[in-house]
Amino acid sequence: MSVGLVGASAGPVWGVPAKPVVSITPEAGATQIRPDTPIVVRVGRGRLDKVEAGVDGVYSADRTVWRSAALHEGRTYTVTARATGAGETVAVSRFSTLKVVKILKITEITPKAGERVGVGMPIIVTFNRRVRERAAVTRALWVDTEQVGAWRWVAPNRVVFRTRDHWRPLQRVTLRARLAWTRSAPGTYGVADRTRSFTVDRALTSTISTRSHVMTVRRNGKIIRRIRISAGNGATPGTTTTTGVHLAMAKTDPERMISPGRRPGDPGYYDMRVSSAVRISDSGEFVHAAPWSVSAQGNRNVSHGCVNVSPADARWFYRRTLRGDIITITGTKRILDWRNGWGFWQVPWSVWTGRTGSRPTR
Image (cartoon, rainbow, N blue to C red; front, side, top):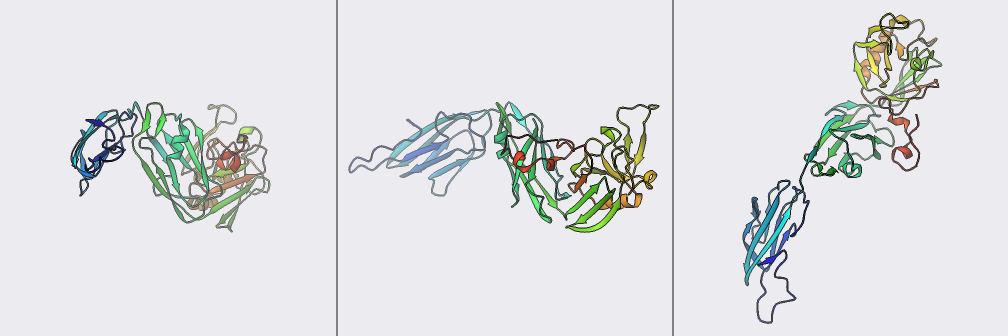
């Protein structure tokens, strides 16, 4: 009995037909074999009579190839193959598959399946545990698009894909997370793939000047509305609207707002509900209806940090906004931190891709 590749001598003895040559993969002694790797037995100068591997498989029509079904993780397999031709050859291979101690799963993908999004929308993938072998996991994440983009890890268990330039409007994008048997840490593997598709809609972009108190809304580059606004009063950093490239993150109607760090009875305390609220950061900034400050809108900044607009303008903006729409604010000294909400467009492309030694700036 031979092990592995057998029957492959320097050549047949003159006048004596050569025996079958049998090869088995995975080869004898292999370890940590991925369970989605099939056992394949091949024979030259003969045909396979019998293959035993402890797993189902199928023969080719001419019985020169045998291929197994999927394997199990953490098991040892012994494959015995017998082939006949001008004589008989028996080959044996013994190997083991990798053992999964912990499973890596995706707990959340943004955008949602089938969602229509704006041209600034990031793809955010969150895992159930921290990822140590980030390069391997990143290689398993494929985005079907003709545009240039890159992944950046923003937390031990979260990675974000951003394009170099804004998404081109009216395209379908698909994320393929090929995580099955991808190792993310010693003993930790993904065991299932995920797919997520969404659609990039029209380009709705807005620019807000806190100095001229005007929001200009463009659709595919054409101005469709100018809206009077009132931004943060700037009395404290917390009441100063952040300057930078924001994204629409969520819409709520109504949205409950409670003054941070204050209790009932404290100066400046408030607990109120506002309508037509579009969230643009994690620090509590919204574009929302503010009927109490209509007289200030277009003239001066009086809010606690949000962008106040009239109820009619708020409803108009709310109805047309999609997650991922770009809202650029200018005119204040408080710069949007790129980690505040979806401030990823605050990061220069060379820094996002790691092509420089610089760090993202606030």
